[in-house]
Length: 269
Image 1 (tube, rainbow, N blue to C red):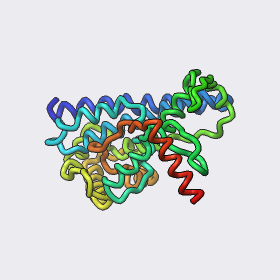
Image 2 (image 1 turned 90 degrees about the vertical axis):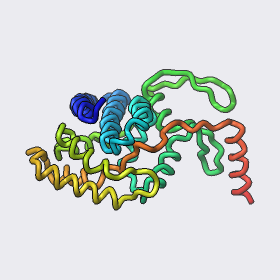
Image 3 (image 1 turned 30 degrees about the vertical axis):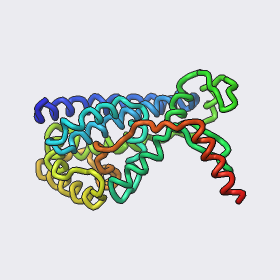
Image 4 (image 1 turned 60 degrees about the vertical axis):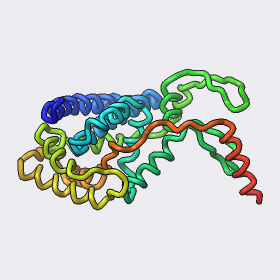
């Protein structure tokens, strides 16, 4: 697509995605007596919102770099893990892109050690939480004994909160970012900086400020915009992640056992 056609297409899609996310959350709110089902719908609302944030990073990517990165961006759009991390990342405060990748790396481990003596080997928590809430399935633990996962055991889960990613996307919509001309302004301003490694939060503040002024000058800020929307826009929109790796990092059982043994002797030594 040409840049203009791409922005047309994304603007259309963002409206569809936001409507979908709101619909899932609205349904979740209607199920106070069905916490497992409400949790599933809340998760869908979060992932739909993350799709919008991924597309906005495509908009924020320098146009000259898009052809080389669009494959990775589209892969993230369709990846459950990438979407879950994208949503969670909006609340992080890394100093630069390099540190942001380090934070992401900690969230994309296939398995990890847990417990006071690192005695437990656990699967990626974001994916496990999603799948175990959705499906009745067979699990196999380290001892090789299979057992059933009963998703209805989540019936005792606590109060659900509006997904942060949805609140952020709604704020961006109110401020005017999701409109066709808002996307053009976003591309023009954010596309001047390529977020690779050392680009930092100072760049984010500067570009966000520039975009806010342009959205206001062009009359794109909606009548529904509030001070809270402005706060979310300025403080919770993470630096672009179009160049970062969200793929699951596999870990062998032998390596995990070796790491666990090392952790044990470190504790007792």
